[in-house]
Image (cartoon, rainbow, N blue to C red; front, side, top):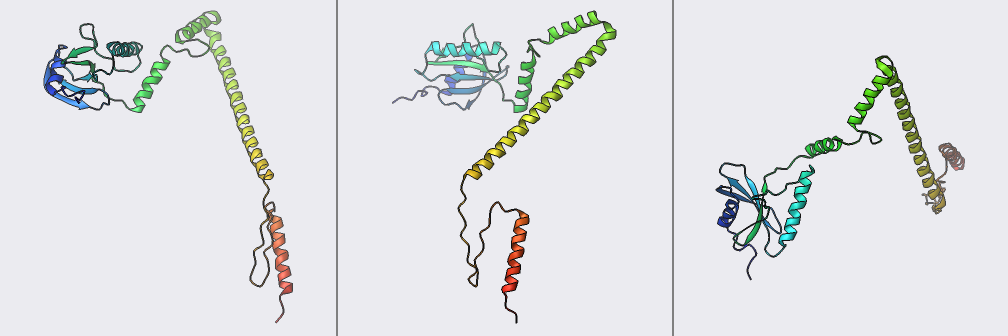
Length: 243
């Protein structure tokens, strides 16, 4: 039984990369991959690149071409992907019986950097509110300046800001009321479930001397408990024989 990458020797890897017009310096490093074989290949004058050798008889040329076209389209839409490099108008190459593609080397990024880039990409060209973007908002401000004049515009801006602040405070109050109502309903449901569940009476525990501990009512208040304990102490003192 022949292994799929039995003939993929180091010389075959370097020769395949050089068929694309690059000059290797003899160094390469195997990277993690499951189905395919991926190598970081160092070049003499340029930055290192990544060579991806596809598993033989696993995918067709059309399937690999569709993958490459999709990656190129995503890169064209500024979505952070690593698209294959096109050499002589082609992204899929063949050498030594193996199909392969070359990619630029891209290092990983931290989560904070990805979040900053995502926010920047989302804000770029995105509508601010009601379908109005930055350019439309600037046009509205210019028209308002021409119509109202420089004297009335600041006062109008203050009035608008006051209205927006009132609406924001009103929405905060509504949200707080909703949260309080939700907490109240949750507590009420818990009390109803506890009330609907019958509590089995506790059996009195025997004390030394044959006396029994009275059953404690779970709904007994602190004042009632103190009064009951005082009566029990008074009755015990009366029953105690005098010396």
